[in-house]
Image 1 (tube, helix red, strand yellow):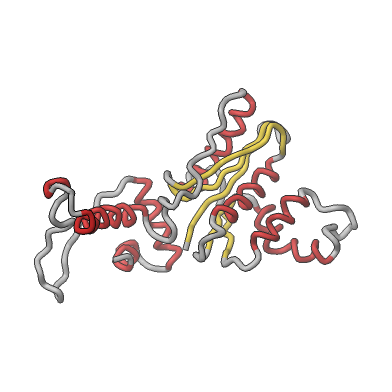
Image 2 (image 1 turned 45 degrees about the vertical axis):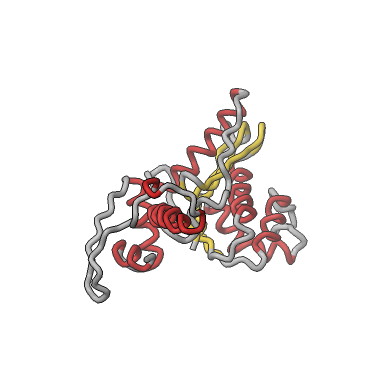
Length: 235
């Protein structure tokens, strides 16, 4: 499962606006407009998140602090479509172009939305919010837009960032045999020195930053297991 936050920001609402989605420090994207609303930023963030992950088959858990976005996608959109993208009173649906694009990218995807309260220290939500606001402020000040790395393939997709880095190190060691011309002292002989006892329990100490620990706890809760069980399942 991919867990990501999506958020929007508009200075003045409407005004200079930004959107952002965030998975981790290596996997996020942001953009915006010189003049837009907060709701447009919120919708655009979700839209671009689904576009960035369109090539993946992972289930997507989207964390939003906008009930407008969640209700639009999960409750209201089917009725709007049946009525020709009009509301119950016959008036046109606001932000219809973004909603129609969202309707297209959601087709065939496995996803669910989770509402999170904004501005209370939720790690992923705060990260997305700060990046969306940074874009809005950049448009207001005429500064370069901090667009982020996007989905480069180096980010986390259903696994903890710590586990991904451990796998990267292990892969670097395994590749030594294929290249053949690497000096023997460039990498350690083994990633972990453990006693050879297949049926015995081994103790591994892992140091995590506060941000990494928060992401681990969040993913464990989403899976319904303890952080220890979640890490053990990644091995």
